[in-house]
Length: 124
Image 1: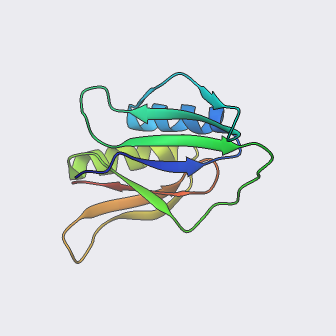
Image 2: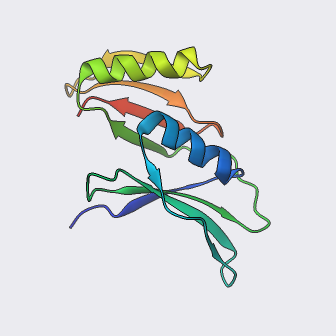
């Protein structure tokens, strides 16, 4: 088994889609609308892998607040964590955890996406 996708419910799926595509080199599916369920969404993916996707979605008539959930995205190296952290900071994004090594040996930092969700940037 493997993870298919994780969903992030958003108030502004267009802004969230753009943000995740810009900083994490993701490609987007076309916008999908299900009139029966009231869901509008995009699936974001890395074109060169068959790995997990990120679904950015909204529900008709539902406003969401950031949750305690988070997503972690691997850069593949400590240098990648440092570079992406500085790019996010330079562009005015809030860095909530500076790069550090966890007791388990993962090198990571964390920021908030445009709607206040925690995004961890990890090396592996």
